[in-house]
Image 1 (tube, rainbow, N blue to C red):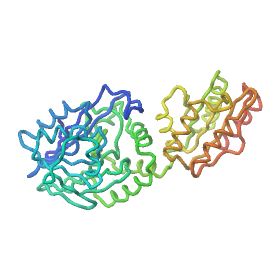
Image 2 (image 1 turned 120 degrees about the horizontal axis):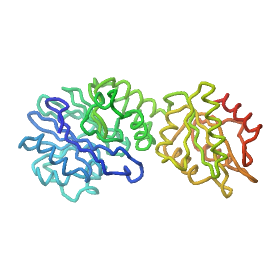
Image 3 (image 1 turned 90 degrees about the vertical axis):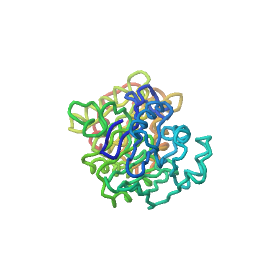
Image 4 (image 1 turned 135 degrees about the vertical axis):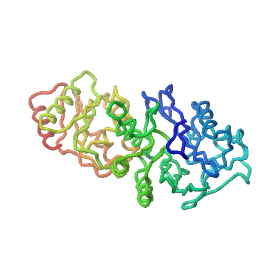
Length: 395
């Protein structure tokens, strides 16, 4: 239990044992499941946590409630990492009213076996308010950010936006709670890196819906942002909102080039790294990633970060290697767009990788593809290096 203010208490918990978030995204630094209590004339609990964190969550909750019974449980998002505690909570506090929107009520039986009595159901919609005394919650619907039932809550007295998965990050909080603590000089926590990877992989497909939500948030006086994963944001909020605005419009954060490659015997890798060296010598930022050795979630995040990209691939049995196919699949799945792309292919007798990559990229919007594909026949030669220099100038 940690205090955000005298009235708002953090009761979430860290998960240090988890290896894959949602069964697919590596989280070497774990993840936090955030939940909050607002104490006033009436007491509201803001969401529950994942099944892996129920014991510490209930302990934190009891301490925050201080022998009092909660009046409301707010359900912002039904995904199991936030709803696993609903059934146990309602059994422990059977008089508590469950606050949710109509879409949540239509889906809730898929997540809990407990039937919620109609007298305990509070249905809210866009713009509705719930008074707790001095504190008041205003409800903001955020469909498809990133599930259809998602909603946010804005607390008017302390100006806290409870933002559901929006502004969430990977990584545990440990003893720190706010961005000011986590981003201190002696902290290894990198909000930009973790938040970008979280956004791209969890929310990235739904940029238009995030834009709609940000327009609603622009009309609020926000002092703090309390997400369901990661630190409570308390300073320089324009920085975080600006990053979300940029990412959800598929704009690059910075000028630079992701060089993503797959190499069977090291020759394609040599060309990719040669190009990186040329870019750096020209004063440009370049970031190489071996797609076969780095999880695709990290590669996607870097693709969103930079304004240009080079794809370098060997031709493998007349096809693209699985790692390159997977990367291109995820770019399409996350509706990636608005970038410059150059292609390097390698093939001893029948190089086809550039054509295959171009075919895949054709499904993406607003992509500018370099006209002069670079073809390597097994190993680089003088002509290859000259072509790399020309590509360097274009990027």
